[in-house]
Image (tube, rainbow, N blue to C red; front, side, top):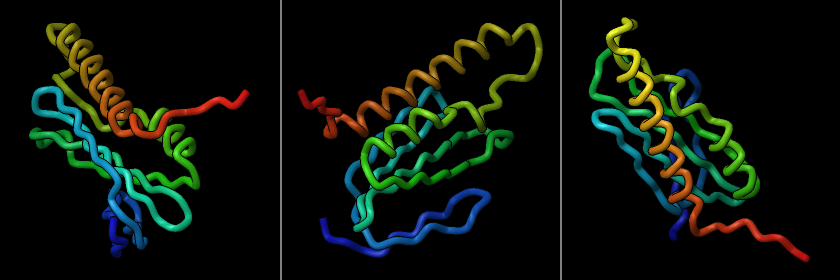
Length: 128
């Protein structure tokens, strides 16, 4: 991993720029919606991005970035992130309630699977 200048265009915030290297990325899609998680390492710790992407105009692209000194900090940020914060789904109508609930559950489950994939090489260890 060769360090390079990385600039992350965060939605609703200033770009985040640092010198670091890409470690791993994981994607989680449910139909036409999904998340891409990307983990970087830099001299003071880690950066992870959470991108929400969709093919629907009423659900715009969104990119958030979290920083932490340790992988435990990154894991906590990913666990605290609401994967449905930018999800709109079906129109608010009783005919769509079940579909909406199922889609939200599937999107949440796929996000958590991507988090697990992203962090799989960084096991939490307990010392005796």
